[in-house]
Every structure is written in structure tokens, then in C-alpha cells.
Image 1 (cartoon, rainbow, N blue to C red):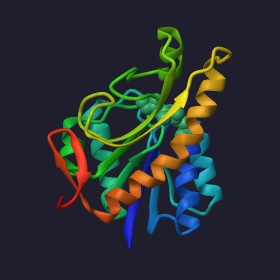
Image 2 (cartoon, rainbow, N blue to C red):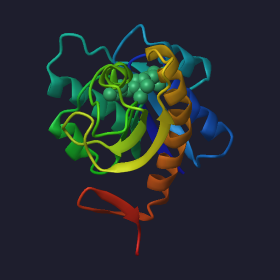
Image 3 (cartoon, rainbow, N blue to C red):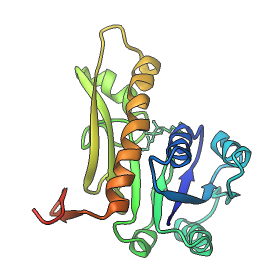
Image 4 (cartoon, helix red, strand yellow):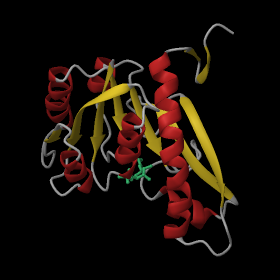
Length: 201
Ligand code: GAR
């Protein structure tokens, strides 16, 4: 059984969706550890309530690579195969990324490469796009970059504000993160340039 490591910084609804998928047998893997870099993250509490291994590693004031070394040590201790960033609001160091080649996923609330970074839903509204969505991608050392595994599109309505658009996107996030994890766990894909394609075709 493959072992997942979840990194989060906040609410943790994507973590909960993954945990629900694991519990329901939609993902055939175990959640080995849930790590938060912020003490106040609600996701950490929710992980503990579910009886999972919930670990707080505060990042405040620490140098990026020194911090990342402590995270990777925790992932290794828990024999993690696949790292899932779920609202983890920190850029990973190149060193961290090299430790888990093609084994780190992230979810972002826009159709990348549009609107990377913070407040993607707000950026989409400000820009005036008519559709937005979410993206699950492999992580490299750049912000919201890396080959795309799955995307979903949602309409942007004239009546939307950041909250209503975020809620519509979030529903799709919860769905496609499970899909993307299953693609990667099954290992039947290849990466050609930036394209993630089915293996052997
Ligand atoms: C999600 O919308 C996720 O896509 C976004 O933060 C939110 C976390 O919610 N991530 C990013 O913006 C990463 N650049 P959650 O804590 O309820 O999963």
C-alpha cells in the first residue's frame, strides 16, 4: 500500500476530500502523515480528530531549506511515497523537489498558467475571465508550475464574488485531486516535455 504525506497551511478541505476518498476506498493508499507549517491550521485539528498522524512543524522565521529539511525528515520517518500539497502556502526549495522527483502534487484554484500565486479566484474576477477552474500539477521549484495532471473548468457568473467563485471551484478541486492522485499512484502515465500522457501510447 502506497503512503501519502499531506502538507497544509489552513482550512484543509482538500485534505478532508482526500481522507474521505481514502476512507471510501476511492484512493488505494494510506495517509501516513499530515504536516502543517502553521499552528492555527484547521486542517491539522481535523487530521488529529480523524485519528491520523498530525504533525505541526512551524515554519515561521526559518530559512527555506533548513525548514524543508525538517519536513523531508518527517516524510521519510513516515515512509511517504507521494507528497500532496493541500493549501500549503509555501514554495518548496529545489532541494525538497529533488528529494521526491515527480512525487509531489499541488492543487491550485485557477486554470494554470493563468493566475498563479495568491488569491487566484480574486485575480480571475478582476481580469474578467468568463471561465475559471482548478489545476492539479506536479511540483517543481517554481510557483504553481510543473506538468499538469488534471484540470476542471467552471463558469464565472456575472453575479460572482470571490467567495461564490471559490466555492464553485472548490467543489471541482475536491473531485480532481482524487483523480490526479489515482493517476499518479497507478503510475500509468509518462511526462513528455510538459505533457502528462497515458503510458505506452
Ligand atoms: C484551495 O483553494 C487551494 O487550491 C488553494 O488554497 C485553498 C486551500 O483550501 N491553494 C493555493 O492557492 C496554492 N497556490 P483548503 O485548505 O480548504 O484545501
